[in-house]
Length: 550
Picture 1 (cartoon, rainbow, N blue to C red):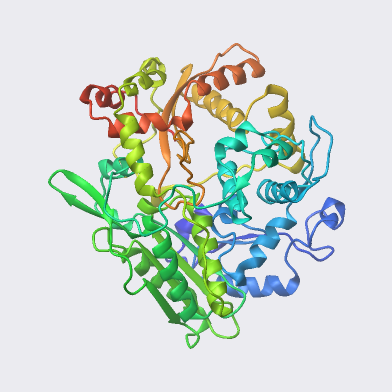
Picture 2 (picture 1 turned 180 degrees about the vertical axis):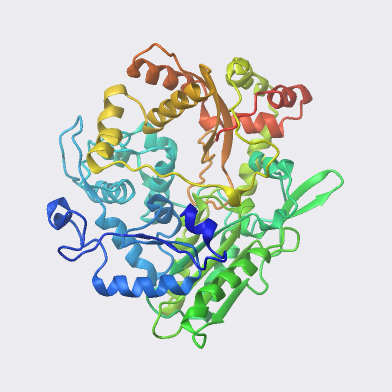
């Protein structure tokens, strides 16, 4: 990949790196056919698919291409494009095909015995990728975490079951959870349009504090392929309904003398939607045209005047699937929000296209209310007591990373990735055996390995890291963020000291205990660092050793 990137466009001519999937036909794959691959769904490329893929690759004009029959960056793809429209249901089907059998657990399998247990078991199975799920199986043993708990709450709400993320952790089996599940309803959340000023959250303040010469360009985007022709009019109306339902998508940002502020823009108006007919273009020109329009869509976002979202559909003619591009400014969306946005857009589109009355599930706690609660928590009398997990750590022990070059530009465009894969048995041991043996999370294992590696690299016994969390912590009563769109992410530093002469189990235990000192997903760091009205509180956190690894 790097060689093709470097040589492409030089006098030597065009260079292309193609990362191929396996081949389906006997004799086409390295090592021949057979083995465990035969027991699962068909994988790999057929001869015809390979020829077609090669033709498309040549038409892209890109120096690096991945050709695969299974999703690339699987978890991200599953999060971002679970249900983009009825025409995209094959993505969900593909995900279900990757369901793994139930692992060995501390409990015997007991099948669901009533409709509530059946509904919850189906939700767990879908989100955790395990089938079947018994009513006494432990949520954490199956690989559940706080992010999945939010998805459980949202999926349960769609089926009329009222749960909170806190309940998912307090009642970690289907049987216990079914016993406390209530009836889902609107609760305390405002169901009408939310308007007015909104306090900046810590992650938003961090974004503006870091500075950017083009802050309006900081976006996330999804480009998906759809199986059937789209109805642009129905899609435009669906987008308008989603913009009215998810209030954070109407936020606006302006810079004034006292800094940046955010507020809700007016509802209504023409949705930021466009249709592009590329069917008359030569096939070799369609890829560059799609990229050019995508670049313009990303440049069209405007923090002050809006929009902060843009939807474009590409009509490539009868011989090729349509494409759907959705661009959203990162200030109003995060990885948890993407499935909510795409599912609601798909639901509205499906209902409108079929002539049904469009409906969406009730709103949960608004982003505005969440931002107000964070500001209150950051300035309550007990807030300074929450400094301890950071100010009482020996940050001076963390060495700086050794550098090969200095004075060079440091750009995202210059980044490279190194991918390391585990086979099925290694993955099973990592995900199931080791966490049960050491009562640790997978992230504890990975962070221990990373800390050991960085400690050897720097010659220090301590390393400083920035960790990221989803930020939707269950710290306020009566707050439900399971269906709220916005940028909730939390980023917080940790100092990990790794005992050099200890065995692997003791090193893991030491790192795990240090991570446990930081509660609530590190949310309080951002509150105190960016929202506290006490200068000394903010200064104490500003003086900390800034991690170079995130």
